[in-house]
Image (cartoon, rainbow, N blue to C red; front, side, top):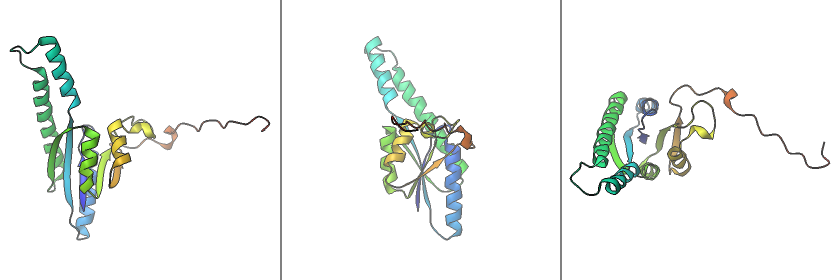
Length: 173
């Protein structure tokens, strides 16, 4: 069984915990489990910073802040993947990729039996807003089973908004 864990700040501990639970159950059943920890660095912010720097400062000798942002982002992502691997406590492959987040995760799920993702939107109530746009794309397009995790205790059923009123046609009571 191949499990892909999408490692994202704020949600990865719960996702790694779910992967660990699955791996332990499968191991007791005598099944092999392969886990990949994936983090994707969105390349769009770096491109914006580079363009802004070029527009404002020209191509002089100044140190490019986009490169500084890229380096700090890379280091933070590597640290997060290392922490996730340590927390997992099992053999796993770590992948750090730069690109369009939702597309990279969906493509990486091609070889997985499960992709584990965390709810990264409004976590104060149940509903579709509990998924960020990248997560919504992955949930809708993943070519494998998706395990959707609440990073903390799920809100109560009382957080679901009431249904809209029924519209009555003229003449209906």
